[in-house]
Length: 165
Image (tube, rainbow, N blue to C red; front, top):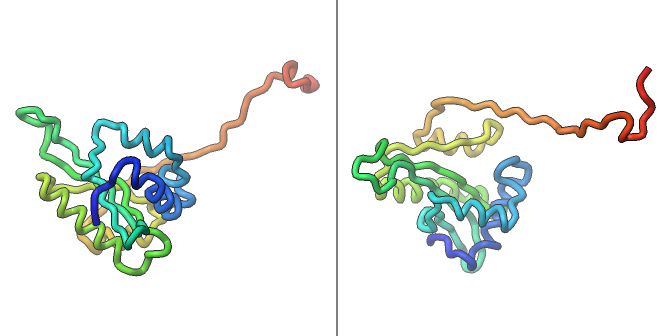
């Protein structure tokens, strides 16, 4: 296991991420540009993106965030960790790698001063929820997201449609 290396690990990261979350609205179907945009955010630290390899094959990764380490003399709150994305390649599922990645990442966050760790998980992802609960995580709150299709509004004259009677 080692930290992410920019320009070296990008393709493997995207392959595993997109295979792990094929239908997820936020984490699936990432492009190189989307990955670059997230890495450009002020909180990104390559040391917080741990990658598990078997030879040249990426098996999974644990991408973490830590909040509250602004460099201020008196930070707004105690450092808090976040399991940002935890993904295991479909080819490596069932090996216990998700648990190992989670535990190593939690140790990494602890070493950075984080005594509280949060995460967001899709309610339908029962395997992930089971893992997190078995490692001591508990539901604190639930967010509900709504999605709808957007349809263009056309005026009858522009669209060449007959005026309604």
